[in-house]
Length: 195
Image 1 (cartoon, rainbow, N blue to C red):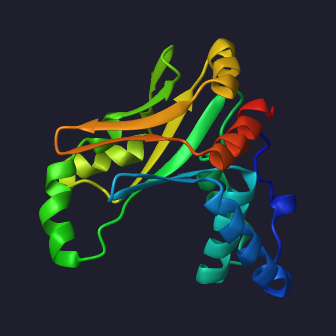
Image 2 (image 1 turned 60 degrees about the horizontal axis):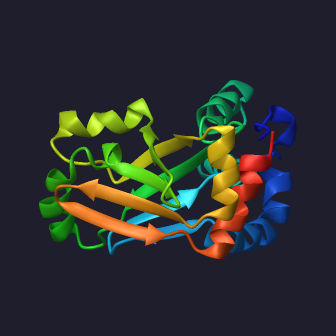
């Protein structure tokens, strides 16, 4: 899948003009790229469009105009775009209540190391967490955002298209097993097929 380049980025003025339609488009797109695993974890599978939008929103929020700053954002967020035969997701731990979050997050340290993709009954692929997700060990609690990737072989990609696919979290304090819905699977097949 192609990465975002500086030529894809709109300046603040141009982005404001198209932002309402982009927000609407990305909101709809993310609905087709979101999987809830249990009551506290959500995965959003990333692609060129989701990453482009995130970069534009960061530029907008920070009012960035310096090309070095913008390039830094591009380089950082491009890491989320999957390579060939790869899936990439942002995993969110969603606990709205601050008190509950304070109690639960220390119990979820290492959750990013317990995420698996099951393709039918043939393949189990462990997610690889971005090193930045490892920071939670130092803070004594799990981070609420983790960046994960799954690397598939060509055979696993072919089976992904035909077999039911499930996401599993198998942490000692949080367990979930959920089948990827058909509309999400359709999006992910596009990701796996793109160069």
